[in-house]
Image 1 (cartoon, one colour):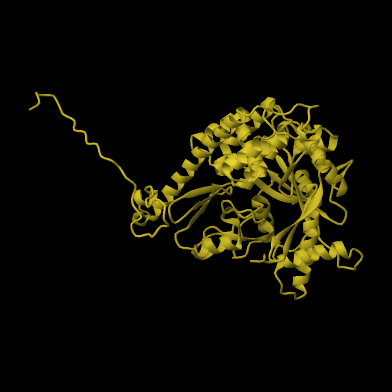
Image 2 (cartoon, rainbow, N blue to C red; image 1 turned 30 degrees about the vertical axis):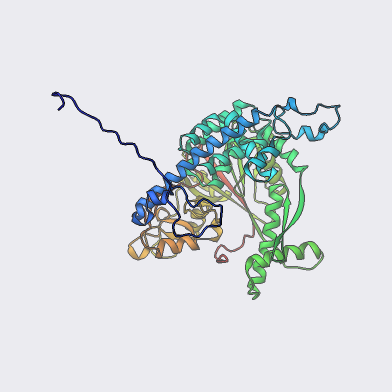
Length: 510
């Protein structure tokens, strides 16, 4: 008996053994036991779809925590391999000066990646890349590493930030990287990987455009064309070159391929592009129909002024060329090449047109107009507003232009298919009373258009300014914003220079 107010505690000690593989015949000498698996402790078959989705998110969180710890281990092991153990310059067996200049960390042994590759059973290149990411996170991006270690930021996004602010940005001082990190990190989980990397590049250009131009000129000297076998008799041709030239080559190949399609060629569009590129290179003098291409240049007013004046544009939003952030200096060079920049300001390129898209101070698109339409509105004191709703199913040309300019790509979370290949779809179906209005229209590629329309359990909701919320059947919700949001300071002009663009009505090769 215990006295009043007292209690007793019983303790049982039991030996825990892993479950046996009783029904499996194992080779002689192999231990016939295994540890308990998570699926044994948390039977997936007993979970609801919502519980499975929640567990997947917990696994992703655990992977982030492990990735942060792995980065700590890599950096810690690197610290145990000092460069003082290596042969010094002038000694037999020392690294050449050129090789030494390429080392990631002058304080760490040149042979550390080789050891790490054997530890992790991976290639030396893979080990070097992991070391670079880990060092960048631990030493130069402490807030990003902390978000990863706490499970708030997933490893693919932390890796993407480290990739953009690691070796490519090695010349930028720590305070520049800290400023970029502070701007990017709060928005990281709401962006796809490709948009996150583009945002990091844009912020790096904004904070330090001079360094970005130096990196660009250095990268141009590394331009090259390589090929590697891919199996099944196929090879991959890779051309590392300035982005505008790369985009132009792709546009030419695409135009030739679409012309072949229009002429009745039933082969896949990708195959036709590869054949068109080969034909252009190997038979340059062959007579062909005129090629049309489309190029979109997005720039804020202050950036355009910097570009026109030849200023570096520090503190200005970077220019987007085909969705890729570039410096004001490169934008000026590109506009001059297109005959779009003259002493009187912006003008339509030769044999092309000029479209100007105006946004408000919060980055919301207001209207897309020609320069003449904009000047007329200013002269007559008319306000600018989005295209009006139409009383029919098919959007008007003005609505199509507005929607594709606002969205730029398919708006389904994580999809990067460009708007020219997307359908301008009713978020609330027209058959259910949804208006043909820009506040109810968004760009969805054919796959995600079909998903929204036909897949059961999916839910799409959009605000009047284009913020789209997508909810899966298992209850997971993701939000995407038009690329111009969140807020920018000041009114922004989106400048579109085009040369007889291909019809946006052409269906993509689904």
